[in-house]
Image (cartoon, rainbow, N blue to C red; front, side, top):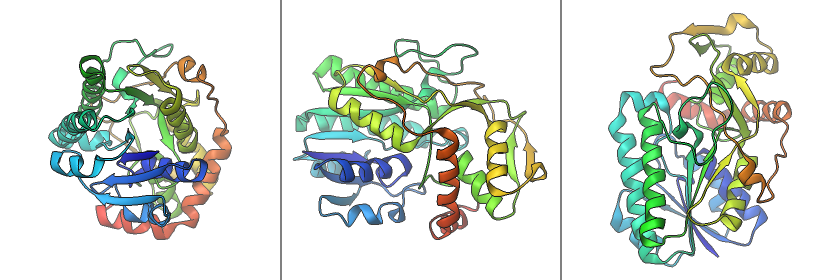
Length: 321
């Protein structure tokens, strides 16, 4: 089977392709625009594999998508602008890539008659929840330009199933962590700052809650949905590792040998969602279960960044982090 994987020079996508090449016999085309968060250094080992090829392309470019998607059996769609703070500063870029780009991809995939279209989304489309967990049938109430653009892309993809019969499945995952994550996100930013003897910017009161899942656990779930998910359905993916940002910070301080004097308290983000939580009964019913213990996974992640300065130092310099 030939997979067309968008955004696969980014964090989750590059790890997904790496997992596919290790655990299946599928061929993969990596289709990525190589924006600031998409890096050839993240996929050098991937494209050395004879079953993989790289194409630099933009999902908003219908001609490029048409040319390169032709002949593939399935699409796994990771490509997205994904940083909430950047979406607040430049919402137009997020609407363009996440919503319009998904529409282009769905339209071309329909004409290419693919057998499956997996749209990778986020738990942020549900908005914030004080108690309990969101189910897949709950109303979407996104509260940032990023999450609103992703909600729009979810609905567009599902509309292509309802209207045209495109075999779409949607996954909505909680916060991923692991190797190759662009160092503007919380865990890699804080880890690399602490390793460099710098402070870490903790927003608000540090009490915002996120559910953390290792990228490999997420990608196993996403591929299970690819194989067994029902077209037209949505599947939440999470780990029940709900921790405040302050909790995460304290763990990272311990793992890097720093103390609380490294915390720099900064003003809260505009519209900062307080808590995310998703019900995962639907994906576990397919046969998925969590494998990574959070504390062990976090320690392994910190060691990966400690050992791979050659990967993250140039990226931080390039964007001024």
